[in-house]
Image (tube, rainbow, N blue to C red; front, side, top):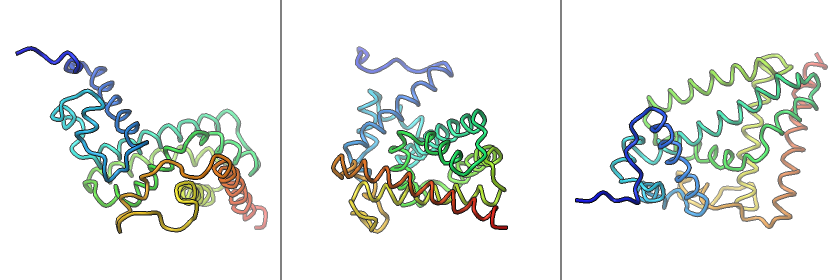
Length: 228
């Protein structure tokens, strides 16, 4: 029997396995651009990554676990950028803090879509122990980020909480043109499904309004300090 030369060789070293995992995640994310989550299958991911389906399951047990890894990767990248910028810029004013957080989030449309998916689908379907590990890792990263923000811990947490809520709300807006519920079943399996549907001009306007909202929230939260 001859080996299918279209498939990559078996990953043996740790570096090769890490690269194979990254290739799988990239293939899944690229498919998700045009394929609704509810319709995207592990078979499709295996095909896009040029792997046997059995090989794919050596890395991820379920589609939900695969997409949770995508969420984790994008969150890590955003927090790393924000942490570096906070360390370099050392913002002192609310406006400077907003500049840093917004710059760190440039080009983060994929992260916003993933955050919607996390809240509507993944948090309900991923194994509890894996989800707990995900949140423990997230909280550890948040600790480092919050420590660099020029606000008291409780206020810094509020800034991040509002940033999260605004990100999800504006993602709904970009997908549906409204801030109401997206199309889909009760569990939101299709909420994340479509690429941005607003016209380019509307999408640009929504992005500017998102930035204004972030700045307003940070100014408001930081104003608590000066009012005390």
